[in-house]
Length: 184
Image (cartoon, rainbow, N blue to C red; front, side):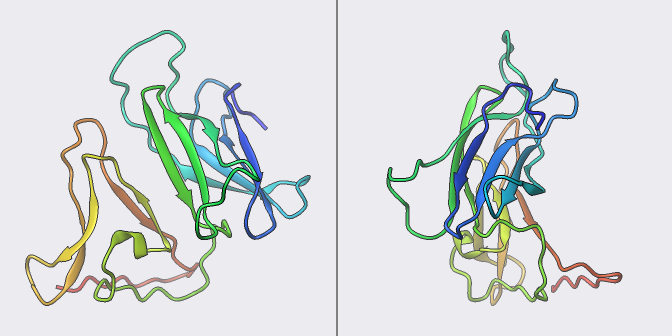
């Protein structure tokens, strides 16, 4: 486990498995990407997944300010349990900003179900449970009425953040051939 001396976090998840959140650094010179490894027994960890790979620019220079997400912390067992099965992690980015990650449990990088997503029955971006949302304060993500066809809803990403931007990702089932259709 190459972590560049950054803090890691490990805990038991709601599905009875275990997870380690850390930086996977091959060179020990950076603190990204933010990754997770899961285990069924708490001893053998595998299934390395990237949770966050993009890092915004540093706004301020300083000694010992490495790029990346770092200093992960979660909720210790017996210290409260938020509703749902999600894993909650708080961490620093570039030693300038504090972020909170809500990670769906079970943690998986595989999608077997066909994707047939529309936004008509979605009232909030928080209902997009199979999507990965990255939402800086000044780059909000929301479900809105389609400006072109007002009878539809769409996913809107706004950007007023000077050094960062919103991102959405969706894991798709593995296929040799895939067709993506954009409705207009």
